Structures are given as structure tokens and as C-alpha cells.
Amino acid sequence: MSLISTQTVAEHASPESCWIIVHGRVYDVTEFLPEHPGGSKIILKYAGKDATEAYDPIHPPDAITTHLPKHKHLGPVDPQTVVKIERVLSEEEKKRQELVASRPPIDEIVNLHDFEAVAKAILPPKAWAYYSSASDDEITIRENRAAYQRIWFRPRILRDVSVVNWSTTILGYKSSLPVYISATALGKLGHPDGELNLTRAAGKHGVIQMIPTLASCSFDEIVDAAVPGQTLFLQLYVNRDREITKRYVQHAEKRGVKALFITVDAPQLGRREKDMRMKFVDESGVAKVQDGDKNVKKDEGVARAISSFIDPSLSWKDIPWFKSITNMHIVLKGVATPEDALMAYDYGLAGIVLSNHGGRQLDTARSGVENLIDIVAALKTRGPWPNPRFAIFVDGGVRRASDVLKAIALGASAVGVGRAFMYSFCAYGQEGVQKAFQIFRDELEMNMRLIGVRSIDELTSDLVDASGLHAHVGITPTDNLYNSTYQPLALAPFRAK
Ligand code: 173
Image (cartoon, rainbow, N blue to C red; front, side):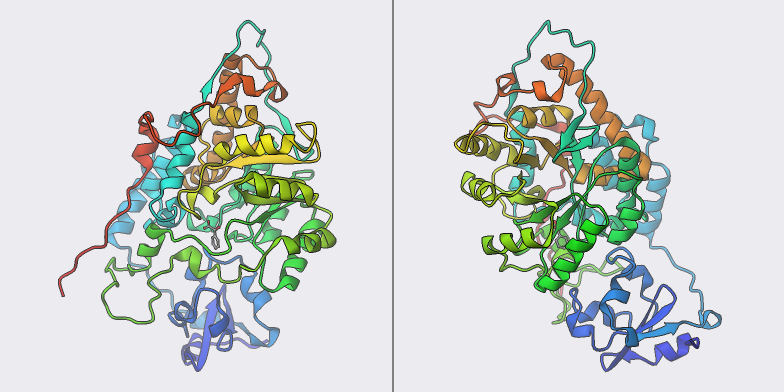
């Protein structure tokens, strides 16, 4: 195949003929412009140019090759024509890099909040805004933490806790922790290795990872990074084109993924205002809110821009179809009521995740751990509990082993942790994730001894007092560690004309 010069590429810099370079190869994306989930405007910004740097954090490497027909792959760029441009760092970026270099040594990290504080300081503002944001007034994201603080322990004494063991099984698969890594999108916004940090750390430590549909690394890259026998689950956003979903699910099963977690709380993406406001700021830090550009989609942040493929018509009627295309365990992620929990059970599914999507979807949705109480009570009406054929998981706001133990005592099989593991790799890469596992182990050991349990199956509801959990008003202790990482929403800025 002949080489294409960068000068030739530069001649195709319009909506009528739009070529871009990604990873040293030239693509004609003219006809793809209207179909791009993130809109055509962002591609046109790179028309006739190298788009790799903007492409990488948002797309898996194979996205362009699989979505663009072969005849639009024009060939490799002529390296002799590539002019290396010296990047000029903004003052803000220079400061950020200084902070990265001077971040605390990992030995000084003693809890999961510390990772979040470091991540907040060193992440590019857009990444922090996207990761940390939650919907509307961010009431639910805070309630996810507060709910755990309304549950108190009733510890038992004199039970010989010289040996304690926190390993367990999750959907029948061994796990060294009663915690799994929940799916979070776009890992490369926060670290060049993205989700692979999680896969590698999980492989070393026998922890289960749920691969996100919208990972920055490709699905196969993640599976290839796993060690033999490492258990992986898959989080699924259901595509409007069911053939795409079918291929994806069946490919995952073929590659050894054990369970499918179908996200059911996001028929439309929540409005995350921190993320939305970031769209208004260009590279020079100038707000674009009032520049009169009609094409700037002012109501979309990173996530909304890439979520248009998600099918809002998904319904219970689709469940038999999922069961017909895969033998993996099927779990619904984002269940919040006893009514829906019973339906999931009656449809013969393997389980549910009581989740509010980390507070990023319906604001003032209750916390998963609060919903757990009513949902366990409802499932008990279907027969003996715990039921080995149906698992309940909880996620949202988990930062301490004590949170994990409370959820399990109230009936959860295991607990999902998303942001906290993500922040740990944003701050320290794979080593950060391993340290986060170690912190969970240390806290589990201490808390289990202090509660008087030797193994996960000894955690029962009489070990906690959740009588205040449903009280949504009253005195909640100030959560200093969390409060210092929680960033308040900002009001719209005033600007002189
Ligand atoms: O919470 C999210 O940000 C999320 O789930 C998502 C959904 C679509 C695109 C990107 C992220």
C-alpha cells in the first residue's frame, strides 16, 4: 500500500471530504460524520490532521477499524512528511505536572479517601469533572456515603477471632475479597494504561473485575491482560442495533467471561453538571458559553456525547432474548425496588445489583444499601434465603471495609466498588489498585475481629442496627474525609459582553 503524505491529508479538511490520521494511518470519515456518536463537530476539528491524541482516551484502539468500512481505510501516512510539533504546555498543565511529580509516596496512603484526594489534585480538570460528577444536585452521591453512617454495629465478643478469612465466592467464582471491581467508563482519561491497571492488579490478587462496555481499552486488550483462570464479568450497555449487542455478548462468552451485568438504570444518561460545564471551556481555558456558537451542544458532557447508541426501548420483553443468546449468568445492574427485584427473580436471572449508578443517574434515588432491606424481605417470600440461585449485590459509596461488612450482614453477596479503584489507578497506576486491595484486607481483618466474625458467611443481620437507615432527616455526623474531596457545584459564571 502506498504511503500518503500529510500534505495530501491536509487537503481533505472539510465536511465534504474529511480525512483524519489515527495511529499513523489515514481514514476517510466523510460519510461517517453524521453517525459519530460524539457528533461531527469534534471530528471536523481534526479534519486533515492527526487526531490520535484526542481519539485515544475516548475510544478503544480498534473502534475506528471495526466501525469504518474497509475501503475507507486509506493506508499508512508517510512518516517522512510528518512534522513534529513541539507541544506548548499551558501554565495550568505545567502546574498539574508538578503536582503529579510531587504527589505523596504511595506508602503514605492509608485509606481509600486518600486516593481520591490525590486524583482530584493531579487529574486533568476534564477527567476529574467526568469521573467525580453526579446528577443534578448530587444528593444521591452523598447519600450513598451517608447511608452507611446510619448503620451501626452490634459487635459480639469472646468468639476466638485469632484466624479470620474474608475470601468468598461471587456467582460461584472464587474471590479473595467480598468486593468486585465495578465498571467505570473511559479509564484512559485518568491514566495511560486505563482499565489494564485494574485487570493486572486483579489478576495478581484474585479479585474479580467487571469490564465496562465503554472502556478506553478494547475488550480484547483487557481479556488478554488477564492471567489464566482470572475471573472477568462484563457490564453491558444494550445497543439499539441488537446484532451488535449479540456479537459483543457472544464474543465475551467465547473469551471466557463468566457473567453479564446488564445496566438497566440508564435509558437516558443523567445530567452531570460538572461534566456539562467542562464542554464550555476550550484549551485556553476560555468559557465558550456566550460565544454564540450554535453548534456547541451546551447540554452535553463527555458521557452524554458518547451514549447515543444506548437503547432506551430496552424492556422486560428482551430478557428471554438475552437468555437465548448466552449461557453466562445474567444480572441486572441498577435495580432499586422489591417489585423489580421479584421480577428479576421470576424471570430466572442470576441476580441483581442494587445500584444508583454512583449517584450519576436519578438524583434523590435511595442508596442501594437502604433498598437492600426491603428487597431481601421481599425475596424471602419466594422461599428459603439466602438462595444459592439468586445473588444480590450492592454498590455506591463504599470506601471502607466496614461498609462492605454492613451490606453483607444485611444480605448482599458481595459489594461493587467503582470510583475508589479508578481513583487508585489515576493516582498510582496498577500499584495503586494493589494498595487499595491491601487497605481493604487490613480493614476487613480488623473489623471482622472487632465484630466477632471469622468468615464472610458468619455475617448476619443481628450484627448491625439498621433501624435508623430509612430516616432521611436528622443528625448525620460530618464526614470530614469525604467532605474534603467532595467538590461543590458551581453557579453559572457572569461575563462582561
Ligand atoms: O456513568 C457513566 O458515565 C456511564 O455509565 C457512561 C454511559 C455512557 C457513556 C459514557 C459513560
